[in-house]
Length: 209
Image 1: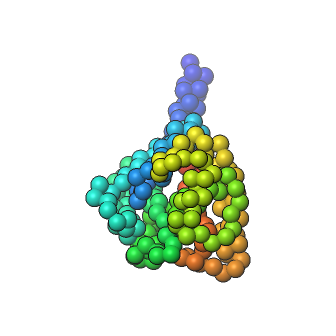
Image 2 (image 1 turned 90 degrees about the vertical axis):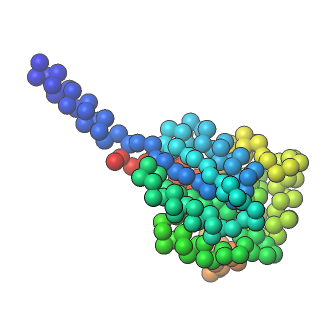
């Protein structure tokens, strides 16, 4: 009988220290490729076992505004059930997003995580297929992305990308290292994408609570 009590106590201890799934809310400025990619990512068994991902898009979205996204994320982060809030947005070239620097500063001061692509999310998509180191305008990045995956519109088939995501991460990491070495900072770190940070977060096991 004592042995049963010892076993039960050990089982309770293991259950109490078992890592829980983290809850992440992602705010996107795009309504097509970004949600398509993240929805594909959240369905992967290795992500689903670690992380519950919710995607929110500004219902009044017109002209993309990173600062508004960050403010929405700050409000959402007040929810005790949310572990992290991320904002996914672009820098854009040749005309940068208005309020870009303010959005980054506000996010940093409020622990909002950012996945920023420069010039745009299509650069991150292109990195799944090939190395790219040259400066790109937004329109050129969009054309390159469509050429590489053969799509006609803005929506993507995430299944074409996800098996190649580690290659994209490697290429994005190489770009980031080059910008650090050269002392190049935002918004001049073109091309670049910190989607690699988002990927690393959702695929890593959460810590035990």
